[in-house]
Image 1: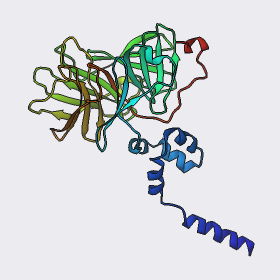
Image 2 (image 1 turned 90 degrees about the vertical axis):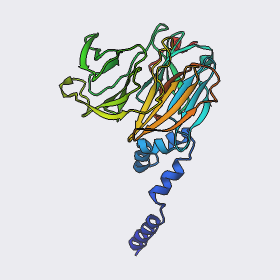
Image 3 (image 1 turned 45 degrees about the horizontal axis):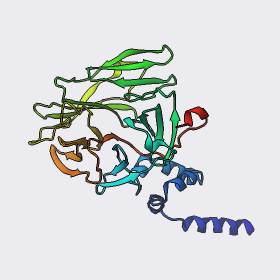
Image 4 (image 1 turned 45 degrees about the vertical axis):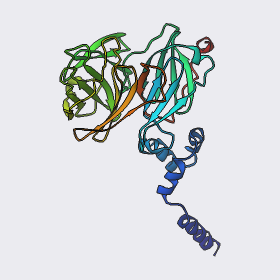
Length: 318
């Protein structure tokens, strides 16, 4: 009898559970630092919080980071473009000059006057890494047990850094190169395990997105096949590299068949462009960013905390 009542109570409790769609909606409104703790509530919640779709739909998510001389901002895209000021969590970083922003999987790497900083802007966690003269360039993709780094340059060749041999070696050719100093040529990670390449001809303004057809095997480049994913030929298309003196390449990401780009105009003002179906869907000038010619990069938020265990105390000093 007691066993039957227990089963009935469990069944009733199960029937009274909220739908998972509603749970996701509630979690999408929970503050970020609380989400990290909630991942251990149950396996299902952990799966939800690891899902990029959930992170993309969170109310505090964003897609771009912009850095002026004195301030740093996040830019969210959907359903409308929203700019928010961010703050460093490590004392003294606000006084350091940032020379480059590099997105690397779950983290953002910031080259500073003195060394480099690994940062999770979503969780507001950062830590110094490496020697004071350390600098980070390019992108990385770790697709094997042996750590490898893939670095892109403004040429038609992609190189790979082999840490076990401590040297660079050729990996594969890019589908196109640069014929002008103001051509845009930007390599990014696509869908976590592939590459995408944005190319804009400065003369014709023709813009293309190439992607690798299959998952990239960092041990064997023979499987790398590039396919044309998006082709844009739009009248009055903006130049994504506005001047010869300002050589920063545009930042971009692909959302289904939409292309979302951040770049500066001839006056140094930052813009967000949204393209789709061979037309300009939307463009917004980031008026909140006061300083001209900001550094910018794409960033996909993550709940992965910044590792701190192997950082020397000396490296934490500003």
